[in-house]
Image 1: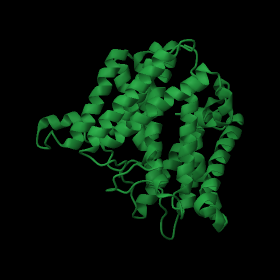
Image 2 (image 1 turned 30 degrees about the vertical axis):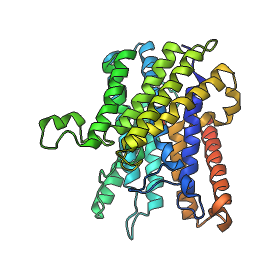
Image 3 (image 1 turned 90 degrees about the vertical axis):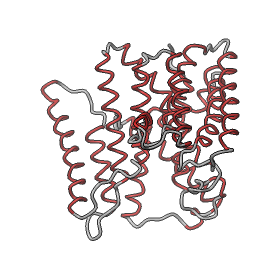
Image 4 (image 1 turned 135 degrees about the horizontal axis):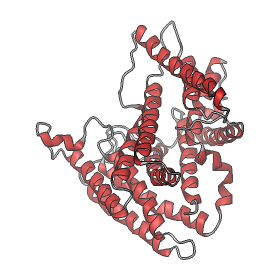
Length: 389
């Protein structure tokens, strides 16, 4: 199947918006509707839509990545190993980000982040192809990266700040969600009907979890796998993306796209109806990962992807978004770069003018910063500097 431009572009737009909302966090004079809602606040701010959109995009990439590896001749065990390694890498990165606080009188937060990123690139960076007798150099660099990351863990532990799981960090949550969705896809062998059944099951498990219909004392509680973060809400978002890709592969036709576009719009309307019902029981809360937050998000994502597909793959306007290409193809690198930017800026004692940290001008600066990070990512990718898990 020819590569679908809409998938990369939808992911790139989501990444750009994630950089944008992360940069204006903490600014003054920002409209309340653009911020994250509080724990008990019944609302969905603009910022509360970015993470679920990222999970939806991640889910969309699952069938494409695993199908690609199957076409290259990978066996089932090799694909399972690929999923395990990728999930593990994201979870480890998430835990390091979560535990990146500095040590009083020792390693600062900024230096921890810089060393952490160096470790990430040593372990998971893309290395140039080399002769067999030179591969020991790459293995040595990867080992150096592992030792650097382990050293950071030991250093924090020795200074009374041992690593903790907490909420796993953004990348950790993505890693767990990816693992569940990818294994569901492999278990169902990518069959559309089976994946739809699994998707519906994740939606039901999300509702059951928040409705507390399975008491903690019952052995059947294991069905909810409480050790996996997200309460099945995150996995329902990811599986929604998986199903969206499979529907696209089954029904999308660039010459006659109406069936596929209509199907996504129907799914959007259905999710909206579910959202109205769920909202009578639960508040809309990203922090609590409530069913109403899930359904309202999906009510938006299905039609938005339909619009993206129609614009880029049907009308051929993918060129409009070419400047976002690095964010769609080197998403992890794009996500990590701000860690370096903020750390270097703070170590050098640099700061933005006050006017760029407030209101409209603050939002404008945040958007320009997001574009700058995307450009820097593209520049690094051209120089073969890229994270890949």
